[in-house]
Image (cartoon, rainbow, N blue to C red):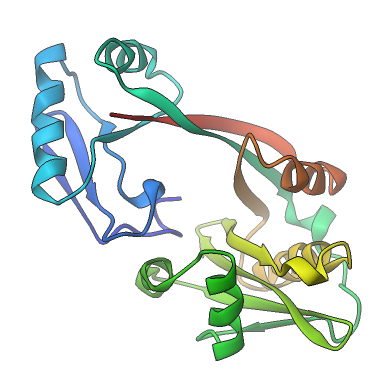
Length: 226
């Protein structure tokens, strides 16, 4: 995730990694504990995030139980629990329906419009621009109209799909399935053998989609926000 959805900047402040997201959302703005920390170190992270104009936000990963409890005691609430799904690309790389998907980079104007409709604006497009290495936007069409869009990038042997959006009027037309298939084919051609996605626990529709493609849960995390 760090490589395929890049923060604007990251710095080490005591035992913390502090990320500057420049409005790009939680994933690129949350602090992590990457060293031994004490309860008195938490205000250090809060001060560093405030200096960037960001609210106090931590991501809680596997093994961060002590931090989770300490933040809860300080009044931080859980937001956006997330699960990660993955599958071998060989099981997904089946051709989508003809003329339904179009990998391309940089994104066409219609791709940016589809993302904007789903709430993926300029700050998140800037995240995509910062990614180094193989990357693509996959545009889908259904009923002779632009229907959906996603961003895919490769790091080492893993391709990660981000920002999957299907326009409301074109849902249940197979666009998301076609995008996942096209993403797998593109990723395979760019040296990846695994496709990874993350989704909020509350997004039942997306989770059903990934399960229907035999993608398995491989990890989870959540945020604590002041």
